[in-house]
Length: 157
Picture 1: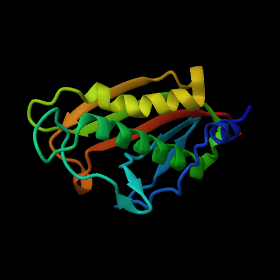
Picture 2 (picture 1 turned 90 degrees about the horizontal axis):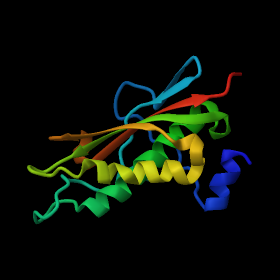
Picture 3 (picture 1 turned 45 degrees about the vertical axis):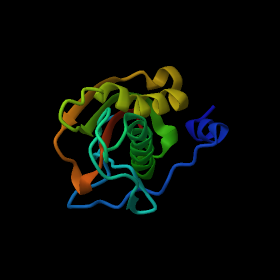
Picture 4 (picture 1 turned 90 degrees about the vertical axis):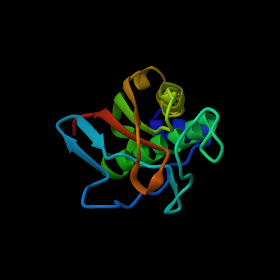
């Protein structure tokens, strides 16, 4: 079964590639690896959430919301891969790197990034087993709570 068939089976549609917010490309290939730029939780050209993630402070993003945002970031990263080389050329997901805009004292970054990792696992199964970094940061572009980038291996032409 191809990855595009798997996405269809799961009822997941890859969004359009998010337009760059600066001078960079959504994804680039070197050899058999594709690196995506950091992807924010964007839908229809708009950031879906703004703010920092916290366990309990008022007026901030709850970890559960950030986990869903990380899933959307990963979906946007897969769209960037698809836009460059086609999703069916993916051999495996090598690494997921995620950044979480964290309120002081928040240490749940790994749980937030599970949103991205779980999506990758649903789609790619064992080919989605990846290394990962989950990093807490003070701020992200546009006030986003989460940013995710991928490194994937693709089949040779």
